[in-house]
Image 1: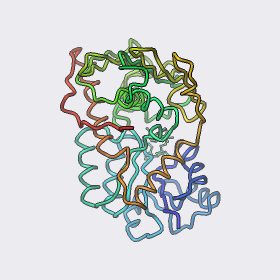
Image 2: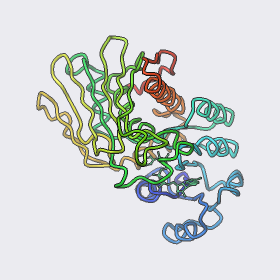
Image 3: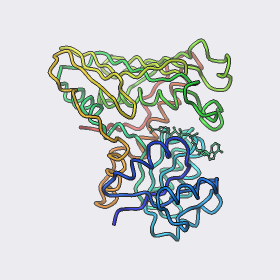
Length: 342
Ligand code: NAD
């Protein structure tokens, strides 16, 4: 049988991306939901043929421990709620996927990893781009130095908040921060997997709209620079005031880039050699990510995007905020040294 997945939180991402992807997966399927809305539970039961016994609310969620039809719990809640639901899923003995950013503090991220270790179950972060052909090619071209050593990276990711953000994203308690937590994390990830290294320090600056208008609690945008041990840097930019999506590497012998780089589809790439190495198909990223995790469970293999990678990124996000708040360079040598190697 296919492994059963329960989605926790039926907002935009579950509704628009994960549930449709789970209709295309080979090794897992949508088997349950956890929602605070009885109307949504009824609607999902009807639309996806989910039995009522596999539907929970946030109070009854812990009873999932007694439900053998649910193998994997996928936490798709506002960022600050990830920790509580991952720990509860661990205590219920389930394998877990947690959306990005994994947590809103390093302390929470560590607590989540410890709970999953104690449960002895698989734990991964919803890093869909590690299963996406264009981004996998960026890893390969960068890490194998196909065009020579990377001398500079640039990564931008943002959207105009008015065109699609939900309100909790502007509430610091629920989001942990603004576009850096939401969109900038892709720039960070992209630079690390393309360079194949974890940076040694970071400097950062909030954009001038921060503190104005709707951006009272969280930043409107942030520009930051990662420095690697070899002296090369990555210039990154994230924002809730601009639509941008780009990842570019300058190398000893040329360059290669994706634009758009980080969305669900329509990604496109090019290289200085015009060799077609980034002319690749767009796939259903979520289906690929979900099937990879299901295979990790079925074959007892390690995931490429484990909780430790989520912790690494939360450590780096905290360092970026620290650098922006103090105006000083923040060392990042003490973060988890983990890279998705090609
Ligand atoms: P959303 O606002 O559309 O959905 C959030 C859901 O959580 C809603 O159904 C809401 O009812 C529910 N919820 C439960 N308790 C809540 C509370 N106390 N306050 C507010 N909402 C509460 O958000 P989304 O876009 O689906 O994002 C959910 C998570 O998924 C976030 O962590 C986000 O970063 C992540 N996400 C990841 C991707 C990706 O590409 N991997 C894309 C979008 C979102």
